[in-house]
Length: 370
Image 1: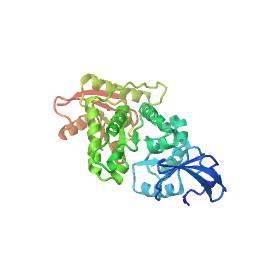
Image 2: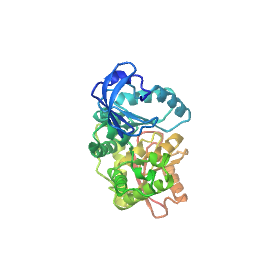
Image 3: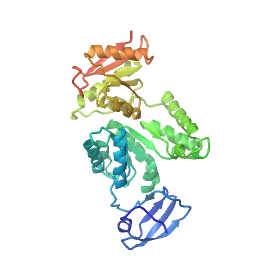
Image 4: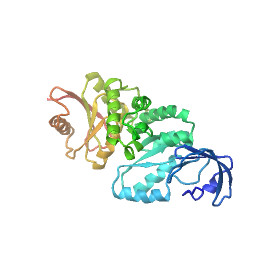
């Protein structure tokens, strides 16, 4: 007998449906259910099963909500501790994300929400999910179990492209350096997987068992860092074409960010420097993948940690916003004092005029550092 913490399981499954255990390593087929507390199954592919392993039901319409009772308890804890990013598993549609965001808003918090894409329903509703989420995770482990695994590579590329078009950060996760759980060197296929995820345009690549239970966590991180750096320093597709939407309310600000990236490329600028409260400018500039680093100054402390997920962005706390010219001069001097830039370097400054006009980036300035 196998016991499961899923109360409505006997009511949800039907005869003939497949049950996958432990990321698909074990497979069973439903023979019958009493609709109350017992499901009889046939073992299709057996193996060793230990406690607390995941269950996937690729053919079943599950009734369990994305935000479970346990999730709600955990949510209270993370909100009390001002966690910046919250990931929601098994998202099926935009309503799942909206429900979580409403709870965060009711608690007076500003945590951002990442939708983990790991179900067929999420793929079918991907555009609406991206629209209401703050970020996306391509959770390839469960996605490759819930859907045919051969479809996952193209789904990954599709999701990454849609996220970049929407200026939303995207994480690629699961089994990136899986063999390094027990060995100090990755397979060549794993190296290619990490490299291709970077080339696809992911903001971040994520480790799981490699660092949580693996024998070589530090070596794993060093290995992944080397792969990422090699791609970004040698053959990264900077400045991919991105089409702006004239009907978007943010069109003018988006156009300024686009122009800042173009100017940075044309002038070989070493940095794009901007001020933001909401983080919108940082997300938008990053989505253009400029070769110049992006330096963001903000008085919003919670935003600083959030920006660590965003590609190519470094954040700084700054709360002395005065006139636009004085602020630009001051932040450029700060970057020089911290040795991020030096005399003779070119930087592209973006800002709002007047400075109090938050959320309306409407100015560009090309600056040669004195």
